[in-house]
Image (cartoon, rainbow, N blue to C red):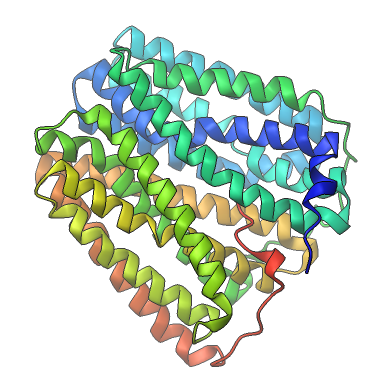
Length: 406
């Protein structure tokens, strides 16, 4: 099937949507490292920074379904602008709190606001896309956006690391603020959207068993990735290296994720087993790949281990999206993907909070080992459950239906 990229690139609405989406995701991609480093600079504790990163992810996850539904029930462009404006105010407060070395409780409060106010933006933008490019180009647009996603997740941590290396750790949050304001300006250039798109009042997809499996996969993936993301800076400190280099390791993780996604896509049709089985196998492999990070003896070994861990993230992202796309009827997909996004964020946040707690109790290596064990156990339990209810083969979607979640 020929994907009409040319028709998308020449579409001015697609270009503006892509710019707005990319800018809005910069703050999300930068948040874990920016808050770990900024929190450490403000309070002197990496554990406090990990708490801020975890709080950000959990607040965003809890607010995303409700905020996304609110965007569905109103004029979407105006709702997106209001959400991004609120996020800008919240991030300005976070940066001000870091600059003033505010107490942790104050930093937590403003971090919650910065995460919750724009939490529905990603789901709202994804629901907006088919209206801008037309249903005939929507799947191609999602495929192309998935490739651009890796660039954003590759560049954002590197910007944070550069700010820290220049001696201004608070500038990582400043970069988040600048990107959010730029996204707000770009969203205002989009055309108005219909008030209530089809399916806005669809019932919750929580009752779908296959959907719940996709949510569990997403949450465990988020937990493990969140643990590694938050743990890198204190791990480098343990290895007598500069914590600011964590951004470079995270950039390597994103690059490896992109390579893993391309390889998985090339081999997909030749891989054995159903998508459920593949997802469970990859999830168990992700847990095992976290162990070399925990036991890395040098910064170079840690960088190699983090990159190897990243190889499995994009394939798992693709599988969770495809599993849910099969499970959710078209009228429920916007809500279903909002919950999937929230499940990933909740898992990521729990990983950050658990890492922050374990840093003071048992050290950063223990936090990674615990995450690895939980991931392997969850994959095994899910495999045992799905093997009793899911047929051994599963129909595969068209190639355009891959890796479509932001």
